[in-house]
Length: 433
Length: 177
Ligand SMILES: Cc1cc2nc3c(=O)[nH]c(=O)nc-3n(C[C@H](O)[C@H](O)[C@H](O)COP(=O)(O)O)c2cc1C
Ligand code: SF4
Ligand code: FES
Image 1 (cartoon, rainbow over the protein chains, first blue to last red):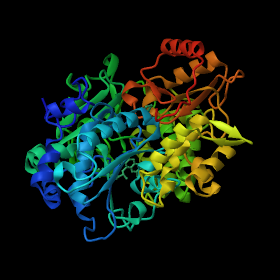
Image 2: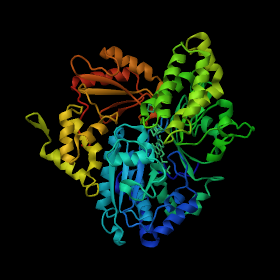
Image 3: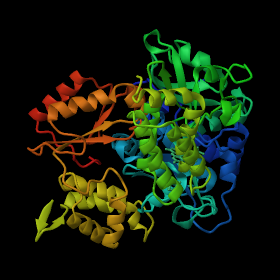
Image 4: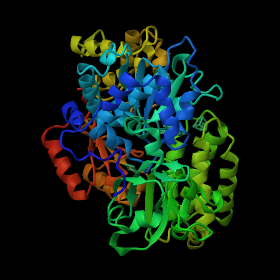
């Protein structure tokens, strides 16, 4: 059994209540940190752990924290990114719903390390029922002296609040999230300056994913070195993978990074194989934004090595033959799935979610959706396929935020690996599925 | 909610909640409370944000009405037109589509006699398609108010519809309560 850091106690009844969480060792990391470690020592442990941000971009967490200007006279903020809106990703919902105190404990540790006295959890508005669970847990934490003034007599104070979004994927992008938290439209900011310098209300701010933050108590309790002993290469620790699509056991799994993809898909401990004994056709391994790979390339790299669930192995081969770990949203398709139709739903998603600030993204996402509708509807031409490739190329890298890339990659990769299927739609003048 | 000369007004309890939310943000940053307060306002206004309601929210937060309009129109959870008592939101993104979302949408269409974006003539139901609800492992998924209903089948959908009809379901309740 793989080490479990995030899901270890997830099935314990009443885990969302503070007594139960504490009985299982909860809040000992806060006691340890506030009584025996300086903020910089906490940051050092996180640096040593090799933990990378679990929101999708995989930026080293400790390094991100060290960009905060500690000398600044301004307030500092830690903001938890609980927007969880990348199609295929449904891991964070689980943490807040079943184990909110682990997230809260992580927020206290992160805020302490950064010198923040106010922190926010920005949670997508659709998850209001989870927000209510977290707010209840926050109230318990205040009552038990883990939040508020002078926590555990340490002199350190922290206020923690939840803030609901209202239906906008783009607010998962960290600067759009900060705009949204300020009560504005979720338009991403031009970077630099980065949030570590100019973030929430113009103050130094760190934005971290739910899973990243919920990992902190374990790191403080066990040490960064122990964390970095788990995993493979530069992919340290465990990762939540939310698996869905045509598998026997969709769900949320905590894996040690480095697990072979084949084992993840076929073993009964994880996805349990493809439904109805069907054939594996394709996988989108890290949320809708990452390149889709056909069965042969997700199981093995182009060089014939077994593909592993790690940052390095999944991206081996670049975009020609590889993909990315992304958010850990693992979407599996069997041979009955139409690649074009699936892509069309993604294209519609990105068109709907584009904030509209940059014309390549605004126009490009809308054109890509229209052309895909044409092809799927049987009115496409061979030229349309090349046109799609061309538009994707023009959107990629030409926008303020990465949503443009996120919209382009699925299109480019689907055509790269499944061009015949697009052509078949055109030849038959209908969807062959 | 009461209304004086068409100007909406929250009751004491709701105003207390609003003031408590405003205090979560630093002095002078009360605009930060806009999204939470709009959620509450929508629930108090039959599930949609009328211009009068948005103007009222502007006065509550001491900001310009235009600041409220431009935000309300950006976020897909805010309805700027009236909706039915019970808004059924069906996820239609990839993972839900792979697991039969289209069948579920078609089923609701037949049962209710409306298309996505429409409201039944009796004003009881609105059907909407929405993007990924972060529950793809239990696809297909629908949302009604703050409730999720997962692993949906046509049979389950029928049972829910019957229940909602029986209890005159209202989906726009105060999300904080
Ligand atoms: C369009 C877009 C959507 C994103 N959505 C999310 C999200 O829902 N949750 C998340 O944690 N990060 C999301 N990110 C990444 C954030 O910008 C940011 O990198 C992340 O929250 C940092 O946290 P981490 O370092 O702990 O991963 C998104 C990025 C983009 C460009
Ligand atoms: S890339 Fe798209 S979503 Fe990002 S800022 Fe530009 S228009 Fe907005
Ligand atoms: S695609 Fe429907 S919940 Fe994710």
